[in-house]
Image (cartoon, rainbow, N blue to C red; front, side, top):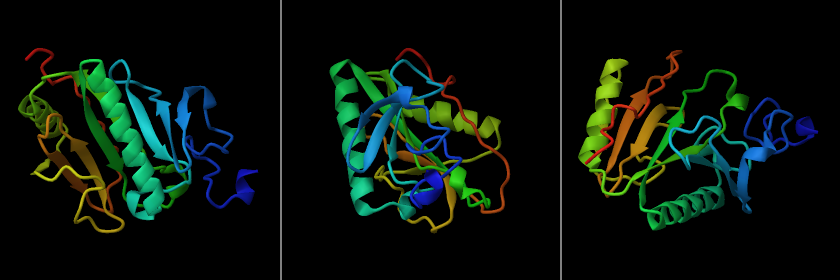
Length: 190
């Protein structure tokens, strides 16, 4: 049972041994991480990369799990590129709320048309963020996990396509608002 495994969140949708797990969405399983189709895809091919062990943040993951997640992310990016697509990657890390069992780290990968300027993606995300009352800081360093965050700090992070850096929104620990940003404001043509 999940209760006998401390590395499994009983109520977590993303823990493979949880009763709530939806195995039909899994695409590939590695030693430390796995890939699944996004339950609510933003574009055709949208998927998520996750650690197998339940962790609410990159800070709670083993270096091996983070390394494999990056390998999976990069391999998927290469597959999308071979199909003429670029990838926007994002992560939402909520501040601790007392139910961290439900927060399982996951990277969302969203394939977009190749050649879509990073500036257009950035402008669309910033406009949508402004619409819902949040501000992003632009980071030239798009490495993941984002650097300089506090251990329990919540954030919303987007890796822009084409070497365009990343956008980061930091959330204070007391927020109770769920932030959802869509990418519908990104121009569909170049």
